[in-house]
Amino acid sequence: MALDIWNRLTVSTLPAGSTPTVQVNGEGEGELAGDTDNLTYRAMAFLYDEADTPIPPLELVCQNGIPLSRGMGSSAAAIAGGLVAANALLDEPFSANDLLEMAATIEGHPDNVAAAVHGGLRLVVMEDNQIYTAPIRIPAELQAVLFIPENRIATVDARRVLPAEISVADAVYNMSRAALLVAAMEGNRPEYLKIATQDRLHQPYRETIFPPMKVIFAAARDAGALGVFLSGSGSAIMALTQERAMTVAYEMFDAARLCGVEGRVEVTTPTELGAHVVSVSSND
Image (cartoon, rainbow, N blue to C red; front, top):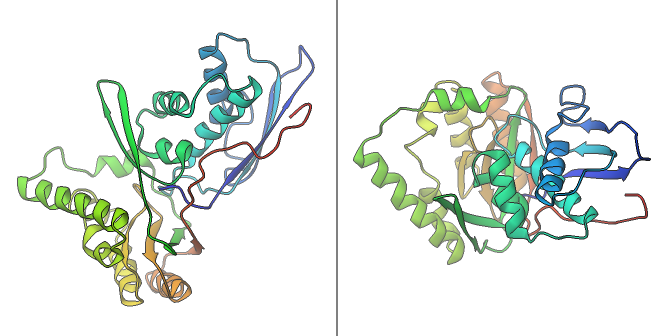
């Protein structure tokens, strides 16, 4: 699900023969690559290669608002932004679905990039290298309350704690709740979200590397959250609500603090917008 938290990318063409440059501000500043190894630049280069066109010297300025390694899709946003920017520079030879296929190839899976490219809440499945995706309506006035810890959870570490096999009972438990989640959203039944966001396939195992998770979950529910869950593989935790968002945010923050976990809260909303061009000038 795309949220109203953004990375802003400014791209300028440089004179022929210039060295490409990448400047990162905000999240990832001083940490992400500042050259052609940068993921956003690599996404742009990928699209130019797909278009069979040499990439010109470019200057990229990345103003990043999406935290890294928190399960909030920062890499998907970087990829989507780069692809959309490159497509705009080439006068948009590729469709949004083409961009999604490229993004999934770069990312390695379509989960996060589907929402980053198309926006909204997306159901997405990949079968035999073909992507099947459909939008799911989001109930009106739904808000997302995020607790974003200072500590990170690397995706590789979050995957390492998952079991190689699961029981039939746990598979059925999650399949039924995945179906209920679609019904809750599409049918505007937010009261179903408490049950629909329950999980047995990854959160119990990831709690071993982030024990305060259960305490923060309970605080969000007690404060009136409709549902609460680990965002991606963590470490961010997201609660959904249609009211009392600030109360939910405060209680999540306070529960984390009492567990010795530093972080911040952010209240935002889902957005139907995916990566998009805001403005184009003669050299941007």
